[in-house]
Image 1 (cartoon, rainbow, N blue to C red):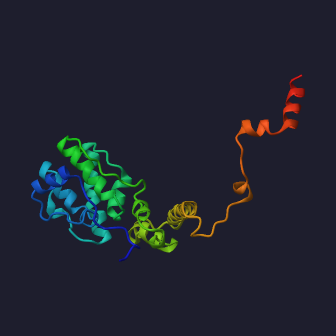
Image 2: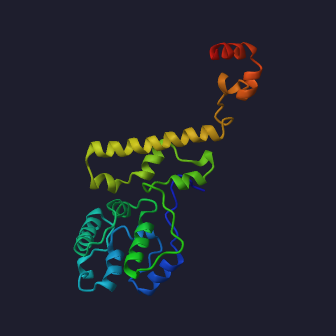
Length: 227
């Protein structure tokens, strides 16, 4: 069993799945993260509610970054026209197949188009990382630093924004999260990492009242200071 990649399929609330089935789309999104990344299905969903604004012959159902950017630029122009506020981070995460981004996008679209509240909101990791998936794995199977970078920084993301400094910051943020996770692992299982307690941790610590009663010199100094 391979543990290095987070699961590509993620569940959606039942009411959202029923709603998608009722739209009679050209194909059903079995893999939400992959099937919604190019924006073609998103445009098709909106075409059922805004047929005059969405002409499907203008959208490319391809997997290339150019096709994704072309489709989403048209969709975002429609959002601006209709004053629809969707977080740019959610759209970018969907384009680059970030964990949880496409699921959150579908839920927000469902709420906007149907004016209904979702009873069971899908929990999404902040920043669209694979931390939730890594936490479910045993420590021995969790990603290394290089795999963490590969899993949380896609090639399309680097190509879309070729700024070296910006990509370096993303890598540093991923490395920082990875180091913090390793620190948590050492705290949770110190024997596995051969972590020895410090002298301060080994020292027997008495409650403050007992320490005060067992030190007569401290009591004398305190009474003299009060006089």
